Image 1 (cartoon, rainbow, N blue to C red):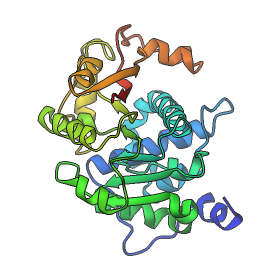
Image 2 (image 1 turned 30 degrees about the horizontal axis):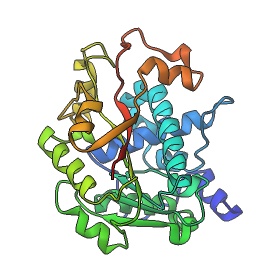
Image 3 (image 1 turned 90 degrees about the vertical axis):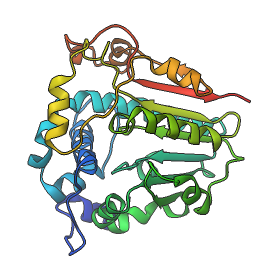
Length: 288
């Protein structure tokens, strides 16, 4: 990041008539950015996201104050999927597709192999807000980053291939902060579409809400909070690995919440409500 980018991102970003606060699920992306910014400020940070604070400055952290309860979890989720995507890219997945990319900055902040292309799919208004905030900094990824405005409940595959994606090349997919906001039927269609577009050796990372272990069956408080910002959870998945297997994916990494905390040295953040069974974060591989 050069000095111009640092100057733009160091304080409040420039505002324009097109800078609009995301709504609903789009607003949750600001809450996730807040968590990434707070983690990046820690001495023992798990990652460094120099862009996250700009999104928070654009709207004010008070707009997503209720999401602070997810802060430590989001930090762990980010670290896990950072590691997953980089390992996949270094292992031969030359394409990365981030579904419902929101305000994800991995295309800019991760050390990708030179041939990697990162496709970001999301609704047009979310992508527009992201570009308005990042401005010239968003162009730092050059040819590596391709944005694809599309609704994931519709025929987004055509938009993705039209943007240069090849279904014949191994791909690392990420569905982070997405599946709980879709219905079970929408999730089935989505993962089947991902499978149709995946060459052998492709990989998939997902996040679901597993109520039987993550919150010991009680997600009512979190559901109320999500609904209060216009982003209600529409599905949970008590068996994420089994669900992926039924859709043609072989689970590769499915840490329990306890294992996830211990992996990244955050045992102190384990919540008493956290169960010991399968967590909601799973990565998997597509067979030949």
